[in-house]
Amino acid sequence: MNLPNKLTVLRVILVPFFVAALMLDCIPHNYLIAGLIFGIASYTDHLDGKIARRDNLITDFGKFMDPLADKILVMAAMICFVALGHTNPYFVIIIMFREFAVTSIRLVAASNGTVIAANIWGKFKTVSQIVAIIVVIVLQYVLQLGFFPEQAGLFHIIGEVFNGFCTLMALISGIIYIKDNWSCIADFK
Image 1 (cartoon, rainbow, N blue to C red):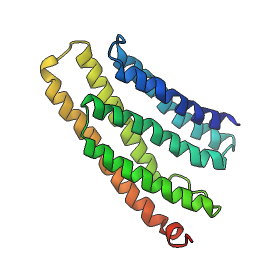
Image 2 (image 1 turned 30 degrees about the vertical axis):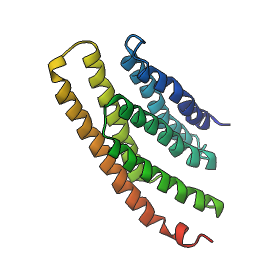
Image 3 (image 1 turned 60 degrees about the horizontal axis):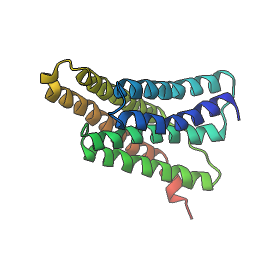
Image 4 (image 1 turned 45 degrees about the vertical axis):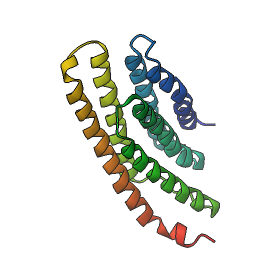
């Protein structure tokens, strides 16, 4: 297994640690810890692609697993946000539907010997999700430190705006992805 693929696997391995830090408010500064873990995991997404392209280490495993690792990390964060009251469950349902639809198309294509790499819209969607998650975590950490408690409602609205935007990007990128890869579905027998 090459270095980019190891970084992708590391991103998946970091997910349970991120979830534990985010959900266990008995841990001092849990939002800070969760944010750092999420930041490291997110950076591996940038790093694995950069190394793979630079050193010509692009593999079918990486094309398939890299976007799946992104989905696992983001969905873990969003589900935790629902449990913690930091986001609207409808946003998460829309994002999950998009992710299942895109993954299903990828699986159908793979069964026919075709590997579909992420497109620019999927990458933009992922970046918008990472930014939204970081914003929510930072705002919650500021509140956890006791700063601006009177702004808790405003912070929630700001988080929802970011979550709503990344949900819109998920929806748009999913529609484009389905349109661009419709032949994989139409040809499936």
